[in-house]
Image (cartoon, rainbow, N blue to C red; front, side, top):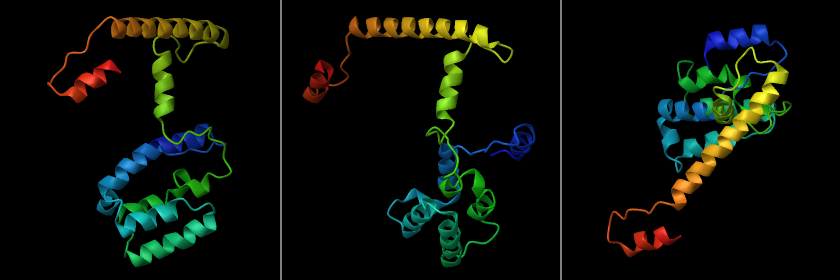
Length: 169
C-alpha cells in the first residue's frame, strides 16, 4: 500500500495491475474501523454487502449509500482507501487473472521456499537446477520432521482424559 511502491510499480510495470494484499487491508480495516471488529454490527454487514459487489457501478452506488448513512467524511480511513479502490476492491479486479491470490502470503511462502537457492541474477537454466536442490532440501526436512514426530512421545500437561485421548490420534 506504500505510495512510493505504487509509483515504482506503475513506472516499471506499466501494463500490470497492482493489487493490495487482502490480509493487510483486513488488518487495517479492523484497526481503523472499530465496527468491523463485531460481525454482528449493521455496519459490518453493510460493508461486506458493498465489498463483494460484482460490478463497479453497483459498488460505487452502494459506496455512496454507506458514506451517507454512516456520515463518513474525507478524513475517514475508509474514504481515503476509496480513492485507492482499484487496488483492493474486488469489483475492480473482475477482468484480471490473479490465480486466486488475494494476499501476499503465497508469494512470501514461495520466496521462503527458494531462500538460499536463487537470487535476482539466477539464469533460467540455473533456476531449474536450484529448484531441484530446493525440492531435495524440502523433502529431507519433511522426512526429518516425520521421523522426529514418530519417534517422540507427547508430554501430557494435565490429567484430563480428553488430552490423553487426543494423543492417541
